Amino acid sequence: MIDLVTSQNAHLHQAHLAGMHRLRHRVFKEQLGWDVQGENGEEWDEFDGPDTAYLIASDPSGAVVGAWRLLPTTKPYMASTVFRELFDDSEPPHASSVWECSRFVVQPPDRQRAASGIDSVTASLLVAVTEFAVTYGVRELVSVETPAVARLHQRARDRRPIWRGSTHRLGDSRALVARYDIDGAMLANLREKFDVPAPIIRQLAVWNLPEAA
Image (cartoon, rainbow, N blue to C red; front, side, top):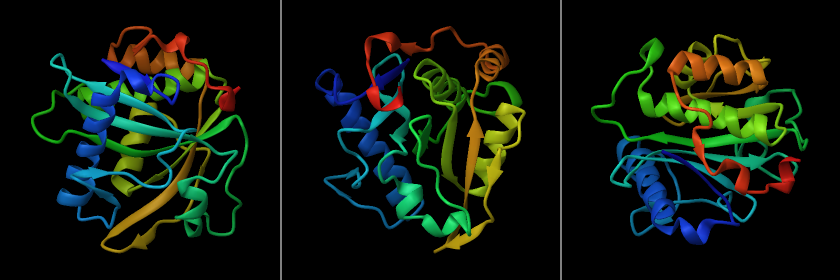
């Protein structure tokens, strides 16, 4: 199940939000050793705010197994500030039709595989972020990624990014920033490829995100 969580319905998803922040801490802090913020076993930063939307995947027991954070680029966002150097000489996008997807995280062990060798949770989140974008008039997503995630993203979409920066060394990791176009054909292709229901996001139409209009 995929839930879209915003400031408008966060009071209904406190357990999911806490589970997401704990999963982010386990993966980014404990497993990858990133220098991230947080406390009490939860990871968060200055971009976890009232304008932030989350796509949170949970299993039948309600446990969080994956998540993606979404931010409008009309305000400062992670790629345009923390990772500004990844754009090289290009200007970071700032438009209501462009959103950043960040803090992608999936529960690591024993994941069922879907098409193209991509696990089922990742596939569901890829469809969900595309469904979110098409529903709310988002035409482009920008993302800071490791080269491995960039390859996964391209393999799932069967399209190259519309723009991709050079790969930079960030501490012990390498990263780049990429911009991906979004349209209805992409959503239909992903739904068919990964055999997911439509809509995949529960109660998607209930939530109003004026920043994406």
